[in-house]
Length: 113
Image (cartoon, rainbow, N blue to C red; front, top):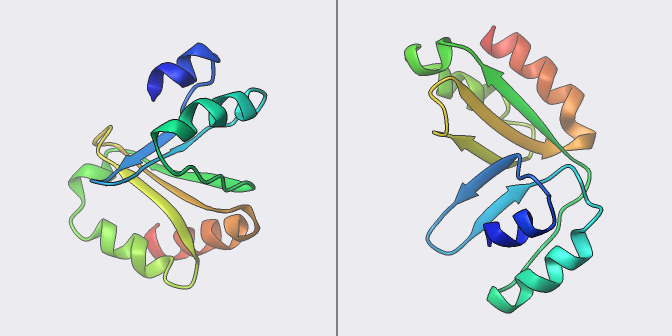
């Protein structure tokens, strides 16, 4: 799968995986149709557009007990599409529909910081 994105010089920004699915975000959709046509033989492919990535970055991510529960509590009324943690001990990435971006940022600021 990653070779397809590399072939079209399309970097992946955020990735999450499970036993049955891989989710990625990209910001350059120039080759999206070609990428989709090459991915479809491997399984079902869905595209969500107008998504925003919110990153919480800093040493506090890995070292502060209870931080994750504060993040989830802050976002309890915001639909979250993806969560990625583990690529770095200092970064949690959250993907939300762009219409909820400002609300999510305000709620995180109030609930976490």
